[in-house]
Length: 121
Image (cartoon, rainbow, N blue to C red; front, side, top):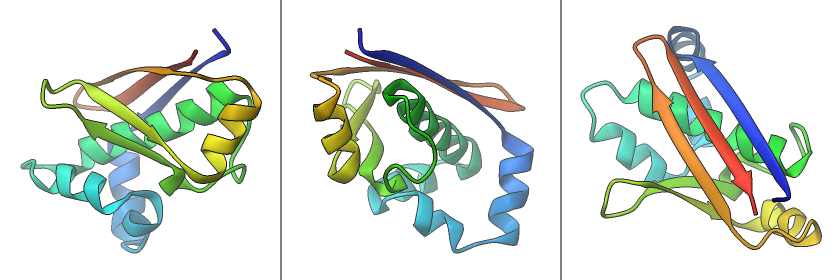
């Protein structure tokens, strides 16, 4: 294992940030991620858990904000419903430099908190 990242997001705080800065959705999330979230009655928990996953990827790679763009990490869903990471751009370059050949991801959220654990393998 190369690294592990864990991140938690307060859903209501995240909701407030998105309400204050509507353009942030497009800055943080890809079109496919936004479409997945829009399919839900309340899209904010789905977005919050994806944001947590992006932060967890940064932590698994041992870097902080600014090391790569948020669109370089995309959290999609397999037909089975399991989450899938798609890593591109500068994030893929960093992963390659660190010897990452695969990823494991787990997502969860309650009414108040969204969380993600990512392992870089």
